[in-house]
Every structure is written in C-alpha cells, then in structure tokens.
Image (tube, rainbow, N blue to C red; front, side):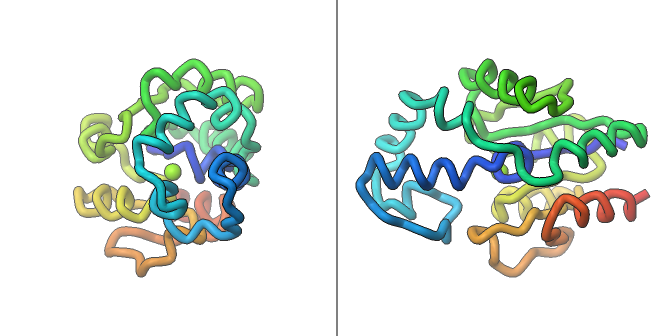
Length: 183
Ligand SMILES: [Mg+2]
C-alpha cells in the first residue's frame, strides 16, 4: 500500500525546538503551541517569521529530534511491504537539510515531495496514496475531503473536532494500528 506521510510534527518533532528558538528570538515566553500557525501564536507577520526560518534553517530543521516511535513505525511499514512517500510543506530549498536529517537519524526515505506551503491534495491524488498521516487539521480535512483517509497525530494545536475521514491517533502505535486496519 502506498502511504503518504507528513514530516513536521509526524516524523520530525520540530515544534518543541521551534517554540524554544522563537521564544528566544522574539523575547517571549510562550509555553503551549495552541495554534499551528506559529506567526499567529507569536503575533508577528508571517514574512518576518519566515525570514527567521530561512536565516536559521540549519538549526531549526537540522536539530529537532524524531517523533517518538516514528523511525520504528516507518521501518515496520516498509518491512510489511508498504511504500512511503513523504509530503511536506517545506520548500524545495530545504531539501538538502531535510534529507541530511533523515540520514542522521537513519529514518528510511525514498520519495520526499516539497510543496513550499502549497496544498498537498493534488500530490496525494497524483501519487494514488491510500492513506495519509498528518498533524495539521486543515491539511487533514482537505485530504479526507478528496477521499483519502487521514490518520491525524494528536497535538496541542489540532484539538478541533476531527472531520469525516480523519482518525485521531495518540501515538505511532495507533497510527500503525490504523494503517493495518485499512487492509
Ligand atoms: Mg506537519
């Protein structure tokens, strides 16, 4: 089965590090990520925060730890004969640092698609993915609306009621169970 997988918040535990670095940069002390849109959380213009990300890409995309259970989960899925395609909203310019991170943490990858903040729906359809693993409710809803079931990894910023076709998972064990249940 071909499985689509998001990176930030699903494979790469980016948000704790981003929160720490953004607090330092903007001299704030925000403790909970209640909004997926970090510029709204910090109440700064999107461009300004994007600029900070571009200038500090090696730190912000290079240093996060993997999400607990993600590496083992991906390895199990591949071992069971599934194909993993990563789709991230990261930009194509971030390919090098992203792939280095996968290698550093020995997380298997073959196809990594970079949308550069654009919708993931077209790629999910184009690649004929059977399920998608995501943490951003807006993406999850859009993909589910296009007819592809979504497993949503629970996070402080996605506690809205899950839409039809979106199943909330508390951890990678539940993601694996959800995928196995589709067969
Ligand atoms: Mg994500």
